[in-house]
Length: 338
Image (cartoon, rainbow, N blue to C red):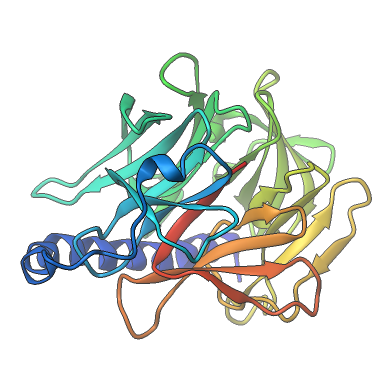
């Protein structure tokens, strides 16, 4: 399957999830509020009890009055009571210093916005986004933010969508623009393909990051340099990377049935040796950018087949034989604040 077909198939799934979830919010949320106004959305905790220590931040997807609202649970009790922030997001990423929130407004004229919030969940900045929210990540110290959206209109795409990924200083400041404009280096050679797409940023620090680049009929794990404005290939066939807390490994999606149909599984690559481990007993069909719960465990979201708009967050150890386990019910776009 070509890189273009991969992008379109990837987009189709994510767009379908986004549209289904947002359609639910727009058409049903008022009825849900009326029907369940006297019912708590989930077992709840005061926000002050969970924002001082290590925690998991996520988008609540229970079909109730808090649908789409960002929630928080303690890292040591992910299945326990959740605290709600009052902020609604399609995608969210958090650090101790604040959070990046991508929002869709599917009114008469659809619009999309990136909202940045401080540690108390108060808005400090916002920017218009050029398309449907897909991914967002913050640098380890919270000073940089990355956003990926799906956009239409690129001349090299005959149908469907392509991606636009940008990095900027959190809360305003310097902006590096679309990463497609960075110099691309593949296998040691500078190339300038017109069909490139970039998505799924994961930061090393305030200068270096990893991401996915698609061009021709392949995808690549690339290392990005903000100072040099370069994207340099690390290895082929990797999508939506996530750097481990200790900085030694990167996890990503791989297609285990190339050339026939897309079947995503998760792999982990040692950055020093290049050795790659496929989580053979792990999730199949995953369409999310994984996050590291700790140095040995990954978390990711999966939609429920029988409840449109509802997702759960699962965990899996980074060994080939590890099987997934449910971590947080009714949760999506989870990040860990250590």
